[in-house]
Image (cartoon, rainbow, N blue to C red):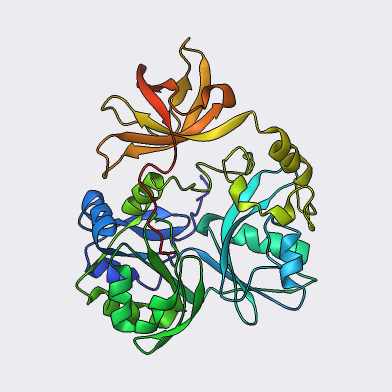
Length: 374
């Protein structure tokens, strides 16, 4: 008799019933049943670029760090300036491992009495273990599974949200505060992962559906799924953990050195002291041997994740980590890693798709300009 291998049941976000009501096509993602699309990826992508789109990102991990030593403790795990982060400000960062690889990337917001971390869904359990193991004795690490997260993104997102509470308009990019939205207590940051202006709204799980319905009553707003979220973040040149960055990729290789503030770099007042500091500091000084680049297809064939990249002599040069046909530009776009001698803007490499080679031009990121509200 063969043993039955039980697969763990997929989790559902507090908006599951709403997704079904709106005809979402649901797919497994990071252990959750998530909406990949409603009307269609292209339509939802355009909705976000032209108006406002509402994404359910409740599968992401929300974690509080509480205590006098929380900021200093977190700095022992990330190469980012947390101590000097003012109340109400948000910063992008990453957990690194002993070899300088990126265990996860995250958003850090300093609030009056705590630090709020938002981490990737697939890594949230590992991140909690990592935090508890290394700094659990220095501050309280509290998971917030009872919080949902909604992302309202697009050039008209502020207009729509201001109708619910006009006070949100005072937020600038990468800032956050507490607001009451449709009678629900929320923590709102002006941020997101689409390259557009927008907001991420942390709300109690039991209030999420009611708030989502109020937002969907605004004429600018329509639901969008993970499919459009992926094409939007790729056009914006933003990394997806597990694809464009992972535990084998350093921040310098990933072209994320901009997120390491001066105070944490060699010569800075709080340089080093985080996992992999030696490797990362060496790469900051000397450069990395490979780097993440943008690639623009010169032919129509879409180039997907995993495609090999060849140099002019048709030798292996690198690989694609994310790729799609850009809904905004109408051409294939991709991100990938190349040796620095092939990574200059304007260089031509060849992607291998079904045994055929397709030329791609190395191009500056983002593919579509960011429109954050600064």
